[in-house]
Amino acid sequence: MRRFAVLPVLLLSACAVGPDFKTPEAPKVERYTAAPLPGTTVSAQVAGGEPQRFVDGRDIPAQWWLLFHSPALNSLIEESLKNNPNLQQAEASLRMAQENVYAQQGAYYPSVSANFSPSRQKDALATVTSNAASGAAVYNLHTLQLNISYVPDVFGGNRRQVESLQAQSDAQRFEREAAYLTLTSNVVAAAVQEASLRAQIAATDKMVKLEQETLDLTKRQSELGAVPEAAVAAQITVLAQTQAQLPPLQKQLAQQRDLIAALAGRLQADMPQQTFELSALQLPQELPLTLPSQLVRQRPDVRAAEENLHAASADIGVAVANMLPQFTLTAGGGSMANQLSDLFKSGTGFWSVAGGVTQPLFQGGTLLHRKRAAEAAYDAAAAQYRATVIAAFQNVADTLQALQSDADALQAAAIAEHAAADSLAIARRQVELGDMAYITLLSTEQSYQQAALNLAQAQANRYADTAALFQALGGGWWNRSGIGTENRAQTN
Image (cartoon, rainbow, N blue to C red):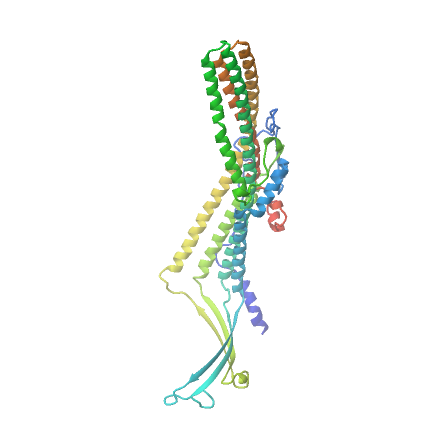
């Protein structure tokens, strides 16, 4: 009996057919960009103009958005993580994938079923003998039966199927992490964009006020005959053009608020209370720069592509196993009696034990072509994995280049805005004294307005691209509580 008991264990420990999956090697590169990056970005004497330093090998905190030191942003992200339906969908899909793994693992064990079948029958005594012991033509028959069936996984077909489903579950887990990272990054980006729009609206409002003051001055001078009426008309035109820029900015702000509500899982009529200004955000001054060899272990999209490749590899084994002999073991036993009370009495029992082997011989090439299709699916998954890795490295490189360009652009925008503000102040004084033509003042006003808008956008770009770097490097999901130690160790 002991030999029969260990038989399933021996069968399960046999080698499974098909390829054994090996984790792809990380790209052997030392940096993300073609040329080495400077260790520190330049600084500008404005909000958000602090220098930033790249720290090689620095790990990424799970809640990286805390580095912006914005309580409003922190509370909005917390609310979004609780209520966003896209994240909830990803979590439900993960639970479904895990249950599919557990369901397939059930095939490792024998299948046991019980059946009870009571019936009342009448035999044709003129032509056959009654099945009842009493010889009666009409009788009751009660049958109670226990059936056991077992399909030994001799060639590992079921193990490969479980392996494939487990890989799909792991891929879905990384899809969940990608959804988490995308949500938090989108919330930060939306908050920064809202702050940028508010800064642009404030700059435009300031310009409208200045141009209104200039218009009032021009009208007074025109009434005194110091300037022609054409100067008044020109100033009215410039004021109207500046005021016309406000509605588009206000529309964008309203749409951005709608986006923030949606990210938080709210309807637009139930708008979150948090609002954002650039002055309330603090720019992180030390930026993590993990090694390129670690990126493929940290990016959720790369890990998901790897697990899809793993699943495709296991599917080849499933296809190969389907071409080999299939073994089955069945057993059944029970009791049959005319009276329910007679069940299990001596002479009412029956049993059977059977085994079988089925070897596919000819199926029109179906199994062969399914194997080839599985191999082609693996090749496709391998290509998709390589494409995902390349895109990940490109994403990081683009973000690093953007951060350096953002710092340069902000410095230039700050200098331009300061110079334009000085020019406008000088021009206004000269016009008041009658030493400058109004056409020059109008040009100076337009230059200052554009410089102010450019400065607000340049400030916002640094915040947005800083958040984009945390996203591009994986977002620190492996440091979040609730992540298994095995998965956390794989990233270190």
